[in-house]
Length: 107
Image 1 (cartoon, one colour):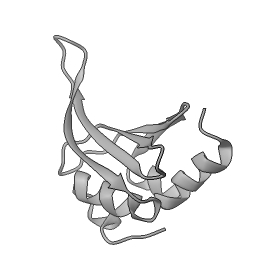
Image 2 (tube, one colour):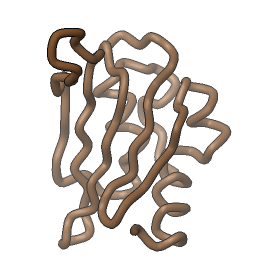
Image 3 (cartoon, one colour):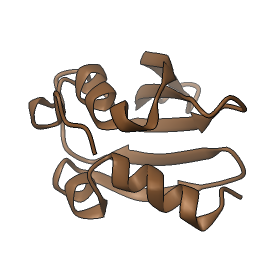
């Protein structure tokens, strides 16, 4: 599992739990290399869930998924970014989802 300090740092770079909650983030979770959450509020990018992966070189990959399909109970990747540095996590999330309140924020 991602160390508690790393998880807290990632959440902080998104603007903190309160900021994530304000944009509709729910069900924050983590495992050995990933932090994930779902977005309960509609957004221009059609993103319903986000998975952030910590790469061995210290950068992040962010994949954004759309709604689940009824037939297969899977979600398609609707946008993504790689090589993201921690300080840009909020900005990249804003760009991928279209959530304006996150654009150009560095935490």
